[in-house]
Image 1 (cartoon, rainbow, N blue to C red):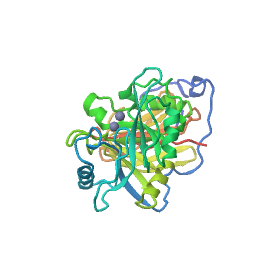
Image 2: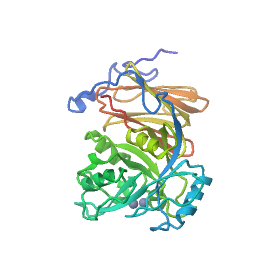
Image 3: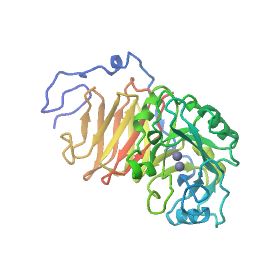
Image 4: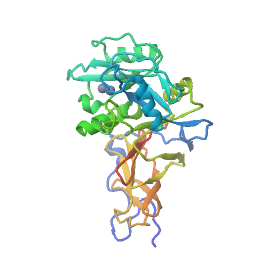
Length: 353
Ligand SMILES: [Zn+2]
Ligand SMILES: [Zn+2]
């Protein structure tokens, strides 16, 4: 076998040494620092527990079909550890129960997008009282009201809402955005907010990424997505602290088990998947996929057109990890993985500084 290293031609596909295009000049010459060595939170070995959280759930208190009590029981049976009942424009009191799952406060505020005039929905996760907000409030005002009510504001389903990227002034007051919403997926195939999110991240907005069901109807839009939160313990205070610190990842199935940087190389480990992508500010990014790209099963090394080095970690026919060289054109990198059944998981963005 021919040893492979960045900047050399792939065996069998001779071409001039060096990258085909220069990522740095392609990005207007902007360069960004490389991240320091170390494990990336929440994969940093801190003591705590992993909690499977449903952070966007409706009940019969608004337009969901199950009562708050039935919704709590359903989520207990489905193996959730934490539940935020996020009824439209109201605070739903904790239903009776034996503590399973832990119920933290929630709401979904109805605002109006300032330019498109479409529905702009803002989750208030972990609130202890209903925020004082009306429909004419700006995103900034609503997000600050959520924080004043003890919660964290997350922008809901931006694709379903049809939000323009130039009408989210105030997004910096948000903790994050739904990268995936199962209800929008089932109803309309409008689940994935990756494209909009990367635009906002590239602009420098430091948003965390959650996956939710937006449950309304049993058997239809429930138990398809969750946010895995690493908290010191299973309490409201610890969950809120972990959410505020970005100690979580989003999933519809597969798990991310490790994330670390060493000498400019980002390494991710996962449960078995068919593809692993490292997404940076567009147009930068790279993906390894099992079994394609002359990655015959058992093969593992690739390079992208722009010269980025990447290498998959294979176990049998699947990938269980990958190494990505961190390019100085990357302002941030986030990981997205997809398993054999199309189920996905998303890390939070990693910012070097
Ligand atoms: Zn909504
Ligand atoms: Zn909703």
